[in-house]
Image (cartoon, rainbow, N blue to C red; front, side, top):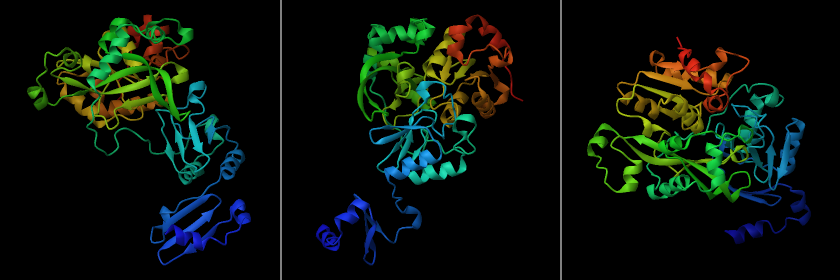
Length: 414
């Protein structure tokens, strides 16, 4: 095969090669094309929609410049300062900038923000941009939102996180090592963005820490990074609860019970500078929820938050069991609704997400999905529109004395 191709292209001049001239040779069913350093073999019987779109670095850069899209070159990638497809903007935070990378070799793009995760081929990028005015990337909303890459896509999710491995992460937190990560969690230096979570709350939620090797999506390589490990639990079915025989072995009884079991773990980089490092392990893990282990069988009220730190902060201020959404505010998973319905006495659910336009819209949607009759939305901006916390963790840090007022004045969606 290769010998035949070599014979067919032996007349290609070096000039044509360097100029990137596209040459083709066809048989009955196969087309061979050559452009610059690219060589493609395609079946001509394939649909037109499956054709490969050839793109050069110069064409990508030209498109970005013509549309006045701010970018920087990082190795073989063009990193956009503002992702045009991010639903949740907050671009004032430096950690939310330069999260969209475009491969200058093949045009593949990917946004690494956990609330976005848009990705695809160059033709997909162009299609999205034709519906979005590039000038609105900073100053206004996006007209159309691409389908998000969420964890609930069709597939087999049957893997569990190794309990002994997680136990090592948890023991590091108990030993307060590494010290700087531990201090980040419990410290109250708000200028350093410390979290102010008490040690007993960290223990209750079984949070782990570590300075470990992880893949950096921006550098495209493995790096040593300060990590926080959030255990995620699944609710056992009634049959599983009846059949579940928890052994007296310490590690298993520490993380599993008759009601739930630890199935996965969310890794998150410490601090704003490492915020973009987030992943759920193992790959194809069973569905899990952070904080589910705090819910008893006869729980009557809970707080539903957008993130893990918010869940711990809400619990610390109220002592109401608090859980976090696994995939962000834009996606309320069906399995969580099914689990909530298993708690027969649970009829008071507070929804406390980011108090911004995006959070308000989606909190109403979540309330409707769970049931307006049993949900209340905590929205501090309705009480004082000039001074209010963005989320539960901000409330813990700056407005802890107002928590009872925020709860008592929470609203019901009609």
